[in-house]
Structure formats: structure tokens, C-alpha cells
Image (cartoon, rainbow over all chains, first blue to last red; front, top):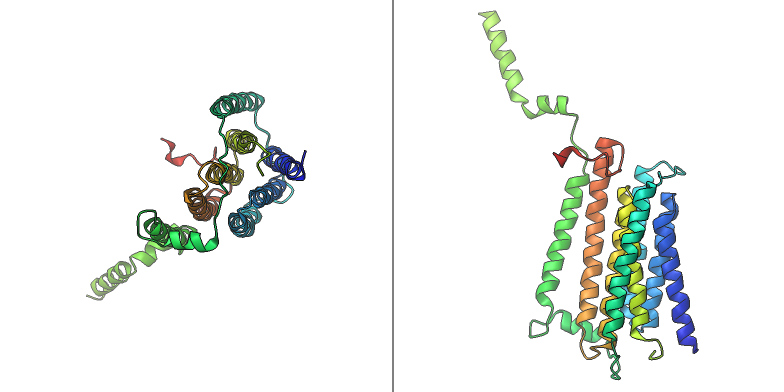
Length: 195
Length: 104
């Protein structure tokens, strides 16, 4: 066994072990921390595959962005230290069975297909990625790039609109919304009273 | 790198996918379900990178799909957490069983 193989098997055991702990632990904060370790392991796998750019993107976006966001939302919505209720036994057994059968089916298909690696070396560089990303030619990704940027803008606006606090409670909102009518009615009543 | 067969790397990504599925089946808390979705998206990313590196080394399409999936995952997580926090404000709970007004 070479060192590269040993590193790969240790990395995969780390990824799968922390992922299993992340979906089975009962405390939600621990679950987020195990997810963090699992994502770091996945970025280590990208380093092992020698695609350092994707590994860096993985660390920046997932570990630095999404997990921090998840931890903040846990702080905002959960009492700390409270344990989540366990899933009922029947559902647990059923999901384990479904997952095992699905895994067996998928892996048997992969095993039967017997992918063989080509001997050519994988030559990527950030320069190449950037040029192809903004190319409009045959293999260019300029249109998906623009669509994704519009999607990010829409997601940002959507987040602000969804998460913004409602201006006031429904009862007071009515008065605010129809601010003119009551005043006018009062005026009319006053006029009537005066007359 | 050639010593590890491709099927072993695909074993890791397949197992990660089904661990995420298990979490999605058993959890009833929205934030933990979101975490399971992140695991599933990560397994798909590993698959794209591995197929690109070992089967089509002269192209870069797998890398691009990985980058776009990571971007969309970030946007999706942000929108999902905004919805979850809004739901927590009105229901005081983020359990999927308590959010059933739109069910009928």
C-alpha cells in the first residue's frame, strides 16, 4: 500500500464517519459541527484528487459560508442543549432498509460498469477555467454564468423580503393601511354632529 | 493516484449520498434536513470531479458543474434559512410536522 492509498482510505473513513455522526446525533449543534468536519474531509478529498481550486472553493463557500449560516440559524431558533426527539423505531428501521437497498443497487451498478481510468493526465488551471467560464463559443459557459449571477441576485432579494420583519401586528396594520378613511369618517361625523 | 480504483472513490460518494438520504428520512427538524441536503449535494460534486478527472481528462465540464452546484447550494441554503427563521417567528417551532397550514 502506498502513502496515497492510505491517505485516501483514512480520508474516506473520516468523511463517512463524521457524516454518519452528523445525521444520527441528537443534539443539533453537535450535528452542525460534525457536518463541518465532514465538509472539511470532502475538501481534503479534492486536495487528494489534485483539484486544488475546487478544494479552495469548497472551504470558502461551504465551511466559511453555509455552515456558519446554519450555526447562526441554530442559535436563532433553538434552545441550547435541548435534545431533539428521536425518530420512531419503525421509521428508523424502514429508512435504514431503504437506504441499504438503494446503496446496494447503486453500488452494484457502479461495480458492474467497471469504470477504467484513462492514462491521460488531467490538466486544469485556473486560467483555463476562467477563460472557458466567460467564453461565448462552443464550449463556453458564459450563459450559465450570467444565469447564476441573476439567480444569486434573486436569492439575495428573496432572502431580504422573506426575512424582513412585518411592519406591525395585523390589528394595527389595518389602521395604518387605511389611514385616511377613519380620519375622513370622523371628519364627516364631526361635521354631521356640528350641523 | 492510479492505485486507487475509481469504484472505491465512487463508493465514498454513493455512501455519502445515502447517508444524506437517511438523514432526510429520519429527521423532522428543518435545519437538520437542510444539513442532509448539503451532504447529498457534496456527494454529487465528488462524482462530477472524479468522472471528469479520470474519464474525460481533456475537458473541464465536471469542474464547471461542480462550481455551479456549489453556487446554487449557497443560494439555496440562504433562502431556506430565511424561510426557516420566518416560520420560527410565526410558529415558534421549526418542526416540519407543525407547519401544515398549506396541507389541505
